[in-house]
Image (cartoon, rainbow, N blue to C red; front, side, top):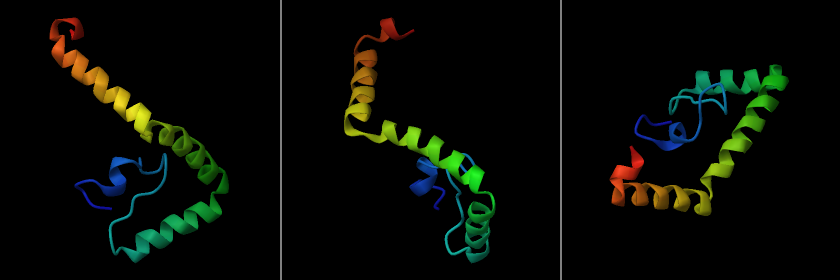
Length: 79
């Protein structure tokens, strides 16, 4: 993961997955072992992540931008 974005923009560490530093083999290994050992937690993370993915569709994001632009155009209505 990179501080400027990448996976960090979509993954909440420990909630929807694991973030590990690039080239950090030990952290990566620990995350894999945790998924294997704590299967229940891994399944819960997958469910939460699946819900989050629904917000990454073109229609959803387009609608968010549309609402934002409308809000800027009608600033007094957004307060």
